[in-house]
Figure 1 (cartoon, rainbow, N blue to C red):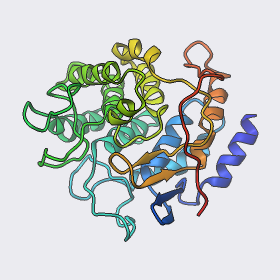
Figure 2: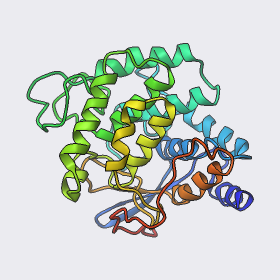
Figure 3: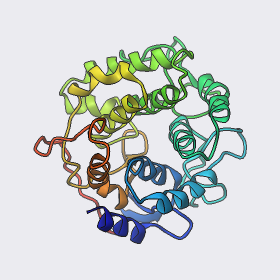
Length: 297
């Protein structure tokens, strides 16, 4: 299966390493090339044997997503490649955490560089007590999404906080400010949401797939964030089908779909074949509650 999987992924990967996606909004469907989706593919491939060439090309693309304004930060798109139809967005906490983790994992940056990013880029983006903390599950000290001085209108997303926790745990920096608060925010968000689909959607405004938070949490626990392990039984599990949007603009309207990430369940099975003791499994029968299908442009 691994040989076929790698062949399928190579067919989807562009020469510069990007895994393209489709972007849908009411009345439109476009092709897109971005670092965020590519980073998630790299993360899913982390233990897949024989994927080195695919990962190396993808990591080259991720390096090009470095922010030109904020040293150590990363953006959704590579520098100079943000499409004309997209709003001008700053670097963000989620891309920075995910891309930094993958560059560190695969030796493209060292621990000292990643730790500087955590301290000088991510930690200043923590929420403070005030009017911006309206949902009851947000703990002061958790992380906003956009890397900006403006906190109003800057959402707190549980999945974004999980990705920050994963990076800090991988850096053996669980003592840093924000780590415990992010863990408490995620734990509180999951408890507040329960099994209510609307509440589950509210705690991850940039992640419309109900399985995304579980996948990110499994990864964070694997990185050493053991405090999040008790959350996993409360999150939906599933087989990874049907295809679901990877991310969206805040609370929906514009959605990204990635054919390569539709193969994520196969990637994890391929990884499990060589890392059985540590690989978190997915239930093959439980429903994720997904109802959306990937469109074709």
